[in-house]
Image (cartoon, rainbow, N blue to C red; front, top):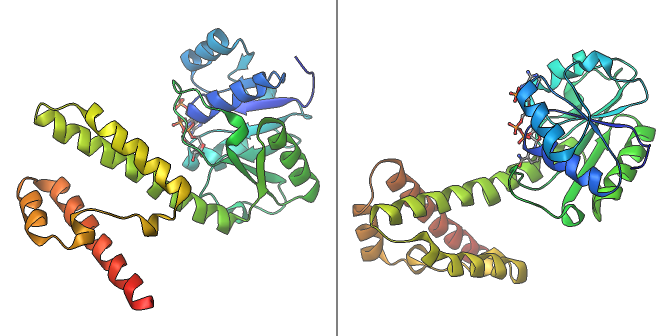
Length: 258
Ligand SMILES: NC(=O)c1ccc[n+]([C@@H]2O[C@H](COP(=O)([O-])OP(=O)(O)OC[C@H]3O[C@@H](n4cnc5c(N)ncnc54)[C@H](OP(=O)(O)O)[C@@H]3O)[C@@H](O)[C@H]2O)c1
């Protein structure tokens, strides 16, 4: 294992787990800090890393990557000794919301992380920002060790990327979940949809999503839409109706612009 740079991962959740693994794969052994003792023990067991519950024990020459919930970032920054360089991994937390006298950075990986799902770090885009030019260079170099796709991004651009990522991943996954529940309710397997899901993803790699929208909403197939709505209730019905309106509205807008 390489001795430097000295990295501390703060937090024991999804992002902490994956970043720790990415650094280990590159021969860098981070130490992991967190308030949750059982979670730290799991890191020791699974990833063989040193752990600590006491943030005040961080050595001054450490670079701490905060992988904690967005709302906990200010509180955790306050617990880290002053000489430690800190970067956080949040997409929508504005760097300018922190006092300017504190050297801070952002180390944002644009990917969805779940502990049990292995990921290839090399193709994950990392977006870097700092209020200090030297620290920004250090973070760019650090991200380049684990990924081939590293960019500088302002807090505003990172915010827009995160919002778009919520729509592209969280919302789309939620629709997969609703589809799975609907099929389960009708004793049908979600597996039947997987070739369709794979084709949907393959197509957006090749063509703009604006050119490949299909379905009853796009075709203005009123009778089918009414039938589908009658088969749904509650929030699922609202989601179907809202997305149908959104597809039709976007289609009309695009036609107006032609
Ligand atoms: N998950 C993703 O796909 C993803 C992608 C890119 C960026 N991010 C960003 O990465 C950061 C971490 O996300 P995550 O998904 O890893 O979250 P997570 O799995 O929910 O883990 C959150 C971690 O924060 C700790 N924490 C929460 N409140 C704390 C506090 N007051 N003091 C100390 N520790 C606290 C939790 O500790 P306990 O276990 O003790 O509660 C846990 O270790 C967030 O800023 C998120 O926006 C997430």
